[in-house]
Length: 116
Image (cartoon, rainbow, N blue to C red; front, top):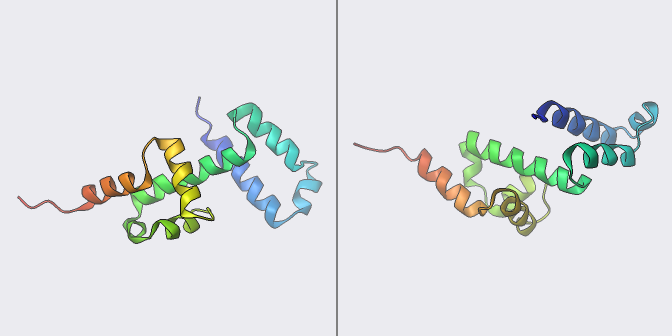
């Protein structure tokens, strides 16, 4: 089952509710209710769900945006919403089974023009 539309909707509601705290009150939706929805439908805790979204975004953006391949690990961590390179690396490895350095190395190899 594909949850992408649900993911996008929940993520946008979450971001909007952070920016505008009155939003959650106007729709009678509290953070604990949003967390319960994520726990039920994604089988992830709220913090792990957010980490998962960040890493998915990182993988997609790194694959599509060559400029990001020049960032340091700390720069990538901050760009994708992590406080430290270590927390980014741990979350990346947990989701993918490879380190960010291995992933970046492979992406860089794919982007190098080959001469015949």
